[in-house]
Image (cartoon, rainbow, N blue to C red):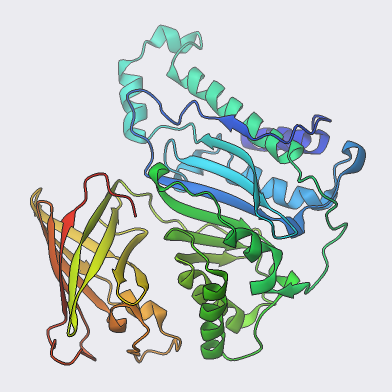
Length: 418
């Protein structure tokens, strides 16, 4: 009942608004650098396709704008006990509207989720005074106040910060191809991601039916997606991508196109769902380390680096490997790091690795020259102290002269970002 009352109050505020249009970023950063607590190692950008935003003359709230406003308000409901499933304590959040003319992103809000982990909450309760809690002066009351401030500023940013333009009065179907649409044009101009704030996660709300996709089979769709992304020079900074707004009109070829499009733009598409779908739950990282060194190919050694991002169970989340030869080639990877001690660990990949780039999603692997790490599926390495030694191989293929796989040696880069 309390949750329903809270959401009703949020919706009422969204409908009423403030009557002001300051066009300034709302900031609530009280939990961003909380003394005595570590900052989150992941950041989340929530992006609203400008195609969903309509004009609101004289402060009258448009019904169409309620779609995206409620999406964000529900996603960032800090009083929802389940928020910890989707956001890490103190995870930095930014909200932006992708301009309908493709000129970039207008940021409306920035702040950090005001929550503690269970361990932190237990420690605060153990050290607190029962009298303070009874009279509302304890950490729980302070946390509730911080959550109210966060939610209030976040909601106001959704009401006040409409772009200064004359947007669509209603959604126009199939306005353009996805690659030429305003969403991708705005994203390609840069999202201002600062990787010092954590590994990036991007959540996009759109309506895919306003875009067209190649009328071809999945193989052709993936090839076109790669080429389109390369032409835009898309760079999502090795991010998780979660896309909402699918309604089935894009079809299976459209889905394959989107996976290849974002992958080529340094993003791994983890969720593709309708507006009311669930966010794919991927644990936030507890540690993020960057290693760099060299990988050996038959014609010589090339620079290689790895972002090893691990959750609390040692599972790789939003981790990437990159090699620089004639161009940068990169691939996300998953797997488990098992440690015998703090100084000796073994990583075993999930037997997908660079095959994620395959244009043909059938079970048979493809090994093409353009694919990173020859398209090999098996990534393994040993971590001793600050040094990684490993190999990239495949039971179904090999590079002539290197039948045991591509060997690499990497060293930790203290404070490295990737």
